Image (cartoon, rainbow, N blue to C red):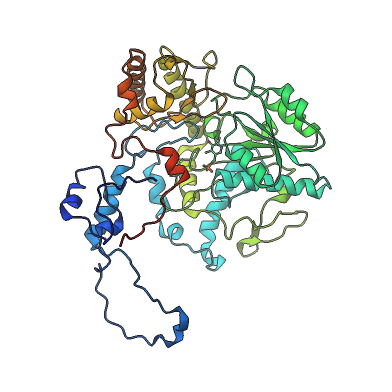
Amino acid sequence: MNMNREGRPTGTGSAPLEAINKAALLPSEPLLFEVGNVAHSGVDLPDVSIDDTRLGAFRRKSSLDLPGLSEPENMRHYVRLSRLNYSIDAGLYPLGSCTMKHNPRLNEKMARLPGFADVHPLQPISSVQGAIGVIAELAEWLMVLTNTKAVAMSPKAGAHGELCGMMAIKAAHEAKGEGHRNIVLVPESAHGTNPATAAFLGYKVVGVPAKADGTVDVQAVEAALSPDVAGIMLTNPNTCGLFEPDVKKIADAVHAAGGYFYCDGANFNAIMGVVRPGDLGIDAMHINLHKTFSTPHGGGGPGAGPVVLSKALAPFAPVPFVHAGETGLEFVEHVEGTKSFGRLTAFHGQMGMFTRALTYMLSHGGDGLKQAANDAVLNANYLKAKLEKVFTLPFGDQHCMHEVLANDDFLAGTGVTTLDFSKAMIDEGYHPMTMYFPLVVHGAMLIEPTESESLKALDAFADTMLELATAAKAGDVARFTSAPQNAPLKRLDETGAARKPILKWVREE
Ligand SMILES: *Cc1c(COP(=O)(O)O)cnc(C)c1O
């Protein structure tokens, strides 16, 4: 994050008290080092006399420079910071492709049970049978929902899941003596993580164009296939919010050419309980528990992006495998007939996320998950029907899935850009939608309401969006180019924040 530190006292570690007090009212917050004072301590520790001769050259030469805060100062700092953050608990969060759905409090209650919250990966396996049972049950649900044969639970995010799935594909080719296959096909509408994953593993990325209707061109896939193609990475539903109608044909063509089908399953929330990706011919697919299964995005540690694998790829899944032994569940490093690509992470994945996701599944049931997917699609189509009166929707002649995509044609000639429009949404109390993604559409605005939102919330959001669009067309340019006004830091230098992030506090002497 790029913080505007202008006008703030920096250096000796203490902001004036009146500035701190005002921060309870003003949406701005000094750094922890500026709130506190390194000369103070929040705790009383007895004086110690340590024989430090054993430390040798490692004895600290300078002071530790920790910010000294009392408990209330510390508490208030973090509570004030949390108020600067827009969150799904504060309002509608229409970030397309990211699926910002409500995180049910029942999930939190279950994740905090000591048997899940306090487990340590190195404790004796006999003492964590219940926790491993939860992982195994979640794995079972994921395999049933996708009709696949194996699932790797350890990846820590969707992008990490992509890496895992593609490593399994690589291992499968190598096992067949086809390690020379060095090309991965990636449609133009793909999330940036797809080509990045393929490139990270040393593959050459070849783009596949989209058709005018926003879906992948089967003929272009067929034309790109060759004995050097390792596989395709395709998102379904795709990032234009459309179900790929030719997905089965694409899978068949890729398989016939000896490749594997990696499906980016970030949008599984639109089809869970309705379509089983295994039936469509996918070989590997990550599932973002923080999208589809309502676990928090970030917060409390890494996320979880389990990867389901087809029968063909199951033998190459990362170790360890969970195995029902004579004395209970156990981890095994090798199973007869498998050729694992090895270990992906130190331990077994993210217990807190697993517990939350399984809670979501059990509290919904199979029929409830299907209903959630249907409601997500219904909500998006409701917004689509409202917005299309003013917004330009490039694929508006089709029903959308869980997200609706606009381009910036309706802003042509107004002097307002997609970025300006997004910033003006902040002034109306909304987090902006995903913008400038997918790249196949100019000035993209990708809106995903999720199943969490009520009719009333959808109407209020649509009314705000329509009012903004009407204002832009009416020539009220300044409202957009000067936005946001109702935000702590106004318009940020986003390029500077990305290219020259200030990640370290440096004391100004
Ligand atoms: C979110 C997303 C990813 C990456 O998932 P992370 O958990 O953020 O790593 C990949 N592809 C698509 C389409 C996504 O929406």
